[in-house]
Amino acid sequence: METILAFTVLGMMFFLGMGALGTAIGFGLLGGRFLEGAARQPELAPMLQVKMFLVAGLLDGVTMIGIGIGMWFTFANPFTQALLELNQAAAGL
Image (cartoon, rainbow, N blue to C red; front, side):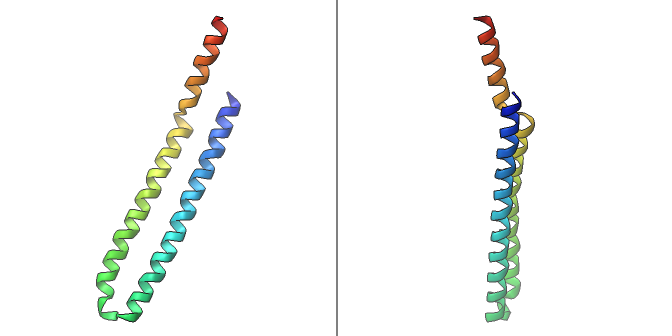
C-alpha cells in the first residue's frame, strides 16, 4: 500500500513539475513575441496586449486542470481501492 502511495506522489510531482515547466516556457515565448510585435508595430500594441492576456489565461487554465488532476490522484487515489479489493479477494481464498 505504501509503495503505491509513494509512487503516486512521485508521479504527480513529476506531472506537476512538467506542467509548470511547460507553462513557464509558454509564458517566456508569449512575452518575447509580444515584445517583438510591439517593437515592430507600436500602434498595434494595445490589440496585441489584449490577445497576449487572453492566451496567458488559457495557459494558466491548462496548468490549473493539471493541478486538479494531480490533486485528485494524490488525495483520492483510485489505485488504493483496487489494491484493497485485491487484498480482500486474496484473503478470502
